[in-house]
Image 1 (cartoon, rainbow, N blue to C red):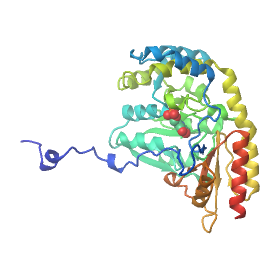
Image 2 (image 1 turned 90 degrees about the horizontal axis):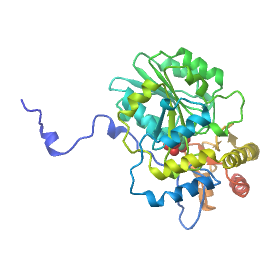
Image 3 (image 1 turned 30 degrees about the vertical axis):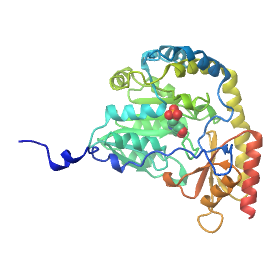
Image 4 (image 1 turned 90 degrees about the vertical axis):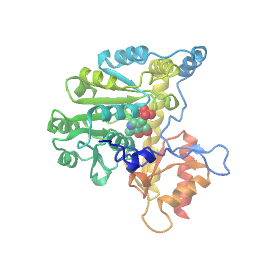
Length: 371
Ligand SMILES: Cc1ncc(COP(=O)(O)O)c(C=O)c1O
């Protein structure tokens, strides 16, 4: 008997669940009437990119006819050396975003589930649902990832627990002990994904990026990115450190040339540019406490953050809402991130800028608050 039904004849149909996925929307980059707005909406590196990376990128201009080596051998060696990792336990992606998708596609099937924090990074739910897994959201009281709430959602069909540490958009973080407790309580067949996109900006000594734990674990995947500390978001390079068997499984469905050649050259140069990394980190360390204190001083709630951004809470009602603040700041040419799609309509996230930017943000918020 033919399985062709009138529906399949009429038009192509996405697989179940795809149309329930909300497409990812990035931070705003334009505001009407302002030629060059100050973009603090995407947690990019406000210092730009490593000059060594730019030079390396430019040198690849005459190599654009070449396919890259998809295993990114130069970046692999550079990352392995810098972090003391086994090269065969690394996998590279078109941004770390691609690695979340690869992981979900490799390990989830219909009937499985993945767990993430209620306000965790948006890409995880897209990756999970794209693989037709159920996405379970662990409540985050006080906007903090809660190990017990997450564990309560884990069952024998949980394939991945996604943890952004530090978290985006909250800026919150778990310390080493909490991560170990989470890992110890997970079934051995459940993967713990530790996303350290902002790890380089952390100054809490109790924090761990999870790499040391991952060295001896069979179910931990640590992801990192070149988009933040190295300022290479446009080039899309991320990597994961995972058990060799997991890397070998994911490699089978990785697009053959997923990390482009200019990106590979630039990433190697960026990794060697300690000066740029130091300047990027120290800028955040200098202005994060200042912004937290100044914005808090205006009577707004600021979450303690370990990222290159802060999360600011506004009154739920009245004239001083987050939406009104977002519009007010945009009117001054300052773009920040509204968080309605994260389920945080009363908050805004703003990337830490240069001194003049940070002062302009505080001045604008002061004007907004005082009306
Ligand atoms: C927590 C978190 N993980 C991963 C990423 C994505 O990084 P990439 O640019 O490597 O895809 C971001 C980007 O904002 C992020 O906030």
